[in-house]
Amino acid sequence: RIYCIQPSSMRAFSIALVALCCLAYASAQSCSYYSGNEHLFYDINPLKELNLAIGTNSGKVVLGFCNHTTVEPCGNAAVCQHEPNDSFYNLGDASSYTFGRLEHSEQSDGVTLLYTGGNICENGVPRRTYVHMLCDSTGTTAFVSFEEPQPCVYVAIVASPHACGIPNM
Image (cartoon, rainbow, N blue to C red; front, side, top):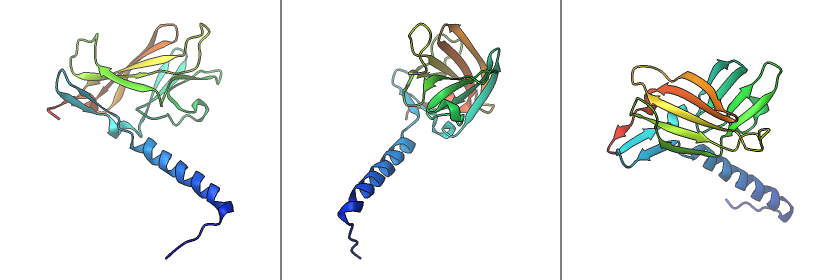
Protein backbone atom coordinates (compact mmCIF):
# COMPACT_ATOMS: atom_id res chain seq x y z
CA ARG A 1 0.00 0.00 0.00
CA ILE A 2 1.03 3.57 -0.56
CA TYR A 3 -0.03 6.19 1.94
CA CYS A 4 -0.12 9.85 1.07
CA ILE A 5 0.47 12.49 3.68
CA GLN A 6 -0.98 15.89 3.08
CA PRO A 7 1.54 18.76 3.43
CA SER A 8 -0.42 20.22 6.35
CA SER A 9 -0.11 16.97 8.32
CA MET A 10 3.54 16.40 7.32
CA ARG A 11 4.83 18.63 10.13
CA ALA A 12 2.80 16.77 12.75
CA PHE A 13 4.02 13.46 11.34
CA SER A 14 7.66 14.64 11.44
CA ILE A 15 7.33 15.83 15.03
CA ALA A 16 5.73 12.54 16.06
CA LEU A 17 8.49 10.55 14.33
CA VAL A 18 11.25 12.59 16.01
CA ALA A 19 9.57 12.18 19.41
CA LEU A 20 9.26 8.42 18.88
CA CYS A 21 12.93 8.13 17.89
CA CYS A 22 14.04 10.18 20.90
CA LEU A 23 11.94 8.03 23.23
CA ALA A 24 13.45 4.86 21.80
CA TYR A 25 16.98 6.29 22.22
CA ALA A 26 16.38 7.34 25.84
CA SER A 27 14.98 3.97 26.85
CA ALA A 28 17.75 2.14 25.01
CA GLN A 29 20.62 4.05 26.64
CA SER A 30 22.92 1.65 28.37
CA CYS A 31 23.37 1.70 32.11
CA SER A 32 26.63 -0.21 32.26
CA TYR A 33 30.31 0.37 32.92
CA TYR A 34 33.50 -1.38 31.89
CA SER A 35 36.51 -0.95 34.14
CA GLY A 36 39.47 -1.55 31.84
CA ASN A 37 42.07 -1.70 34.63
CA GLU A 38 40.27 -4.54 36.40
CA HIS A 39 38.72 -6.02 33.22
CA LEU A 40 35.30 -6.01 34.88
CA PHE A 41 31.89 -5.24 33.37
CA TYR A 42 29.08 -3.81 35.52
CA ASP A 43 25.51 -4.13 34.21
CA ILE A 44 23.13 -1.83 36.07
CA ASN A 45 20.43 -2.05 33.36
CA PRO A 46 18.17 -4.38 35.40
CA LEU A 47 17.79 -1.56 37.96
CA LYS A 48 16.57 1.10 35.51
CA GLU A 49 12.93 0.69 36.55
CA LEU A 50 13.70 0.49 40.29
CA ASN A 51 13.20 3.39 42.70
CA LEU A 52 14.83 3.04 46.12
CA ALA A 53 13.74 5.18 49.07
CA ILE A 54 15.43 5.93 52.36
CA GLY A 55 14.31 8.07 55.28
CA THR A 56 16.67 10.87 56.33
CA ASN A 57 16.77 13.55 59.04
CA SER A 58 15.21 15.92 56.54
CA GLY A 59 12.52 13.70 55.00
CA LYS A 60 12.91 11.06 52.33
CA VAL A 61 15.28 10.50 49.40
CA VAL A 62 14.27 8.52 46.31
CA LEU A 63 16.92 7.18 43.94
CA GLY A 64 16.58 6.00 40.34
CA PHE A 65 19.34 4.20 38.42
CA CYS A 66 20.24 5.84 35.09
CA ASN A 67 16.64 6.98 35.00
CA HIS A 68 14.41 9.60 36.60
CA THR A 69 12.48 8.76 39.74
CA THR A 70 8.73 8.35 39.76
CA VAL A 71 8.36 11.32 42.14
CA GLU A 72 6.37 13.74 39.96
CA PRO A 73 7.45 17.11 41.46
CA CYS A 74 11.12 16.20 40.87
CA GLY A 75 10.82 16.04 37.09
CA ASN A 76 13.95 14.49 35.55
CA ALA A 77 15.71 13.94 38.88
CA ALA A 78 17.52 10.63 39.38
CA VAL A 79 17.87 11.56 43.05
CA CYS A 80 14.93 13.39 44.63
CA GLN A 81 14.68 14.72 48.18
CA HIS A 82 11.21 15.22 49.65
CA GLU A 83 11.18 17.26 52.85
CA PRO A 84 8.36 17.18 55.43
CA ASN A 85 7.26 20.72 54.44
CA ASP A 86 6.49 19.35 50.93
CA SER A 87 9.61 20.87 49.36
CA PHE A 88 11.22 18.78 46.61
CA TYR A 89 14.85 19.01 45.51
CA ASN A 90 16.58 17.53 42.49
CA LEU A 91 19.88 16.20 43.92
CA GLY A 92 21.12 15.00 40.52
CA ASP A 93 19.62 14.91 37.06
CA ALA A 94 18.91 11.60 35.29
CA SER A 95 20.39 12.88 32.05
CA SER A 96 23.78 13.75 33.56
CA TYR A 97 25.19 10.56 35.05
CA THR A 98 28.70 9.20 34.69
CA PHE A 99 30.28 5.97 35.91
CA GLY A 100 33.56 5.48 37.69
CA ARG A 101 35.51 3.03 39.81
CA LEU A 102 34.43 2.50 43.38
CA GLU A 103 37.08 4.33 45.39
CA HIS A 104 37.61 5.22 49.03
CA SER A 105 35.97 2.01 50.15
CA GLU A 106 37.15 -1.02 52.07
CA GLN A 107 35.37 -3.11 49.46
CA SER A 108 37.11 -3.40 46.12
CA ASP A 109 34.24 -4.64 43.92
CA GLY A 110 31.62 -2.09 42.96
CA VAL A 111 30.99 1.00 40.89
CA THR A 112 30.17 4.67 41.44
CA LEU A 113 27.45 6.61 39.64
CA LEU A 114 27.77 10.39 39.76
CA TYR A 115 24.65 12.46 39.11
CA THR A 116 25.19 16.18 38.49
CA GLY A 117 22.95 19.05 37.40
CA GLY A 118 20.60 19.11 40.39
CA ASN A 119 18.86 22.20 41.72
CA ILE A 120 21.11 25.19 42.36
CA CYS A 121 22.09 25.61 46.02
CA GLU A 122 22.29 28.83 48.00
CA ASN A 123 26.04 28.91 47.24
CA GLY A 124 25.28 28.96 43.47
CA VAL A 125 26.51 25.40 42.85
CA PRO A 126 24.26 22.68 41.37
CA ARG A 127 23.54 19.77 43.68
CA ARG A 128 25.28 16.43 42.89
CA THR A 129 25.09 12.92 44.27
CA TYR A 130 27.66 10.13 44.35
CA VAL A 131 26.02 6.70 44.43
CA HIS A 132 28.59 4.17 45.63
CA MET A 133 27.29 0.75 44.66
CA LEU A 134 28.85 -2.08 46.65
CA CYS A 135 28.88 -5.66 45.44
CA ASP A 136 26.53 -7.83 47.49
CA SER A 137 25.99 -11.10 45.65
CA THR A 138 23.81 -12.54 48.42
CA GLY A 139 21.09 -9.93 48.69
CA THR A 140 18.77 -7.65 46.83
CA THR A 141 19.44 -4.05 45.90
CA ALA A 142 19.03 -1.85 49.00
CA PHE A 143 20.05 1.49 50.45
CA VAL A 144 22.77 1.24 53.10
CA SER A 145 23.09 4.95 53.91
CA PHE A 146 22.62 8.49 52.65
CA GLU A 147 24.39 11.62 53.85
CA GLU A 148 25.38 15.17 52.94
CA PRO A 149 29.09 15.39 53.85
CA GLN A 150 29.35 18.96 52.54
CA PRO A 151 26.75 21.48 51.36
CA CYS A 152 24.97 20.31 48.20
CA VAL A 153 27.13 17.18 47.80
CA TYR A 154 25.39 13.93 48.67
CA VAL A 155 26.65 10.39 49.06
CA ALA A 156 24.42 7.33 48.79
CA ILE A 157 25.69 3.85 49.61
CA VAL A 158 23.77 1.06 47.89
CA ALA A 159 24.42 -2.70 48.09
CA SER A 160 23.44 -4.75 45.05
CA PRO A 161 24.25 -7.98 43.22
CA HIS A 162 24.29 -5.81 40.05
CA ALA A 163 27.33 -3.98 41.43
CA CYS A 164 29.40 -7.17 41.23
CA GLY A 165 31.79 -6.99 38.29
CA ILE A 166 31.61 -9.66 35.62
CA PRO A 167 35.16 -10.60 34.52
CA ASN A 168 36.45 -10.52 30.93
CA MET A 169 33.49 -9.04 29.08
